[in-house]
Image 1 (tube, rainbow, N blue to C red):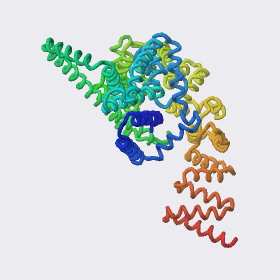
Image 2 (image 1 turned 135 degrees about the vertical axis):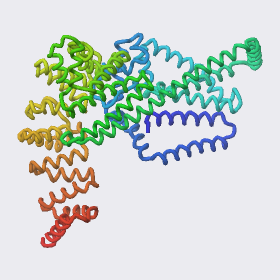
Image 3 (image 1 turned 90 degrees about the horizontal axis):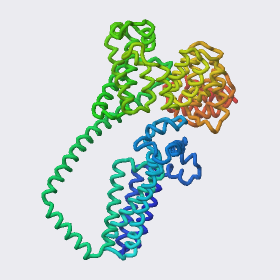
Image 4 (image 1 turned 45 degrees about the horizontal axis):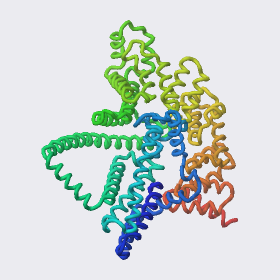
Length: 607
């Protein structure tokens, strides 16, 4: 469903069809070929799902930049690439550095990390500057100078037989597809794509050589090469042996990387499923189940790092899992102290040596200390491989007391984290926590405001820690929570029996939901929660909210029953009867609702 792929495919098919008709002497044969190609495309669309493809394709003709770039992700990453080029104009930030460099410039919240600039040209410019971009443009210019005359000669049947002309058109179409697609995607950074592109370029250039050479010159050239091969016959086996050894090493390494990638994909799928299954924080979680889940993730991440020691994201997750396992298992032990409490106690105890501190830590943590030691070692390896990983500096600030008496300077480590990752939610949260520990509550709120906006997963933590200290109006003014975040905040206040704050948040939710701001997209779940809050508030808009919730999710029987009850209370008997009948068809065992339906029908007949 790639819109860029659709656009490029349309251009290439049109180009190839034009070349086919221009060069062919047998139009029936070419018509049959084009018919087979079109038929294969149609069958593929029908198998894949035509509606999904047409829905994506409609954005190309919508004329709306918001539909073309939903969420402004591409525009933001392109802006970051331009800012990198602006700072490192001549030589760029360095080959392969984009993944680590762009977060310094990407200030907007993002749901995932980008590996490339979503444009091959911008990626090359950001990493190699104008020098690298100039080399790339020069290479494309040379290629165009060689290929365009060749294609025109082929179409005009001034060179080669029909097979040669077909090969020219096919290779030129492939190169053009790669060059155009790279304007708005990173196809050059996908190994299979760039290998195919290089092979097609070689084909085009070789065909140009053959077209430019005279027959006798080619024959002489081939004869000279044959003599050259004969005179150096002994060199070839050695070259082949070295090439074979190199390919064998690459294959062995590739198998290891492929196995690591399989484990990594399985790990990401598992944690995504766990996130989807998580409910609101008021729902109790079985700690032992969580420990088992973390143990499986821990084992998988260790395997990934073993197969591919250079992979940084897996090490980042490994460090986080080690810390989570420690916190959970320590909380279930006879001495349920958190890492922060243990660290503060160790630093305030003024141990005279690291050995003395380790004896105390062994008594407090037992075997669970191994998780912290593994996290500390992993953190240092992360910083050795990728010094731009801001979260690693935060973890090092938490764990350095294990390796050095008194630990490292926490404030300097946090400042370094902010320097390399100024927009990372976890880093901003750590800066706010450091400000709170130093007694600067205002600075803590400022840092956490940025963290709240940047990282959706941190909003729950900030809400549970800061909301009890702030009245609801102040929290809403400071953090501007979204509708789902307002539900979480209202439940938290309600759970803590802060009734006035819970009512204030509920009213704010209903007001914002019914205001219908174009900037805030709402879902059926938002309206279902809105009905719950409006019903608790006895707000007269509850009926309207329930009706809209059913319109968005007509298969939700519970919401339909609630709508029917609201309609009965407002005297809308016919609409209520219709909704109750729909509900009873799906839930015939609900006797109470069936009795309500019978009563409604009786009232309708009486009136």
